[in-house]
Every structure is written in C-alpha cells, then in structure tokens.
Length: 381
Image 1 (cartoon, rainbow, N blue to C red):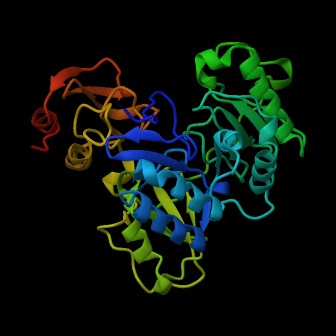
Image 2 (image 1 turned 30 degrees about the vertical axis):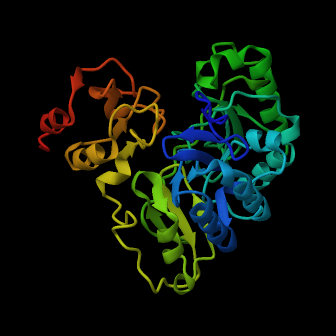
C-alpha cells in the first residue's frame, strides 16, 4: 500500500491522499485567484503529472487528480514556481482560508485575508477540516460555505466575528480582525475543540470577548453563470473540468486575464474584452436555471476507494426530476456536500439509501435500492 494512503483528513499539496485514480493533490490559490500564467502552468502540470482532471471543491480549492507517486515531487516543484503553494508545509496546511470571490484590491476582504496569510505562524495546530471565511463584502455571501470562524458584515456596516454554529457574532474594531480570529482559534484548541473536530460541533461556551450579540447582514446573491462585473461566470458540472478544456478556453482568443474560484462550482473569468470564443455548453454550465447548479455528487466508485456505488451518471439522470438540492454520495462521508440537501442518495454496500432534507448517511426513508429503483421513484426511469 502507498505511504500516502491515509484516510479521514483533507489532502493538501504537501500531504496528498491516495484515491482510486492516483494521488489527489489539493491546491489552495492565494485569495482564490489564479492569474493566466498560473492557470496555464497548472493545466500543463495536471496533464504531465496527473490524469489531466481537475476538481474544484466546496472550499474553492483545486484538486489535481491521478498524480503518479514518482511525479508528485516534480508537480510540487512546479506549483512552487507558480506561487500556488507555500514552501512551508505547516503554513500550507493552515492556509484553509475561503474568501468571498468578488473582493477587490485593498478592500476589507483583501486586507484581512492577506494579513491572515502573513500571520499563519501565529495559529495553533487545528484539525485538518477547520477553516476560515473572510466574507467582508457589502453583505455576506459565504454563509452556507464550509468554515468554522467567519468575518462577516453586519447590517450596521460593521464587521463581526462569528463562530460557526452560532447565529450571531461579535462586533470588531477595524484592524483587529486577525487578532480575534487567531484568539478564537486558540480558544477552540484550548477548550477541546480538536476532539469535536469542527466549531459547529464544539459545545464549549464562547469566551466573553466573543459573545454572540450581532446578526450578519442579509445574504448577498451568489454569482450565476453569465456576465459578471469581472467578465463572465461559468459553471463546472460537479466541479470537474479537464486541463485540455481549460487550456482550450483560456487560449489566446479569449483574453482571460485571471480566474477566481468559488465554493459553488462556478468560476469567474476576469476579462476586459468580449469573449470571441463562446463557452461550449458541453464543457460548462451556462444556464443559470440548469439543474446541475443545484446538484452535488462526489466521484464515487471506482475512483474513490471508499465509495461503493457509481454516483455521477445517476445524478445526471436524477437532476432534472428533483425539485431543490440533490446530493448523491458514494458513501456516508458526504465529501461533496456537508450541508443538508432536499434529496440525498447515499451509497452503502453497493446499494443506495434515499433520504429527504438530510445529510449523506442520514437514516433513510428507503434503503437498499438499486439505481433503477432510485430513478423510478422520481419518474426518471
């Protein structure tokens, strides 16, 4: 068995995870943005050292799939040259920072995220899935995205610190945001949060200085496929795209200067020019009403060794027949979606369990079904 075949944690670039198709190498681009040069370099590296498949995660990270063990170190060297990973593995592991994708240079999101990255050494060792959301735009946008400690805008216009699992936050003085984030992370560790694993599962009372008193502002709408203030927004089916497709799209004719990642399987392409090559609907989701935009599905079997069922073909067949959010998971871990979905299908021992308004692995309404029975239940057979 490979030395990398460890389960139960999130991979990083320095600590990849073995999947059914090879090593899985996660890349956390600073501020969730890749320049044109970085994106071209990443696509070439994914083709040379992996199987050319690239996933975008619910934390707005990228995952290069199918990396061969003897290609891992050359891939790391390339990512270092491109400035896409930190040369310090400890800092890279701590850089689990999700930023709202519409940030602009020197605004509050940019300022706080850059300071947090510069002060990663001050953070304690946190469980691998614990992360930060810097959501300091005019109104919060990342409320449903996975994060444990959040900086958000209140209705008053002030910034607040909010611990996940708490509806209210505490107002902050400008310039103290990272001080408070680091202090709350230390409190989490000191009060046994590592055993709970995530902030929302940690039942210790918050310290007095982090008292929950202030509501976040009403949520801002997420970006949808179509024109965007930065250029154009495009959806990725299941968050997956091939390096060849990306290379073709960002070729010289498209004038894409940079790409911003989001936690909703949507990429925002920065461009000042009208795209002369229109996106292929077969490669991207271009319709804001497409069922794929409300569908989550992990890679499933056989690509993931923990998945016991096929997932994405079933999700494609189900999606047009499901009202609301659909989640198809190869196992009870629910890696593609941590939150509840209106319809959740979970693989178990080679069969499917069906539940409603639930998370993956929840007690099912119907258990032990095959794919045909699932499809028939929704009139999709």
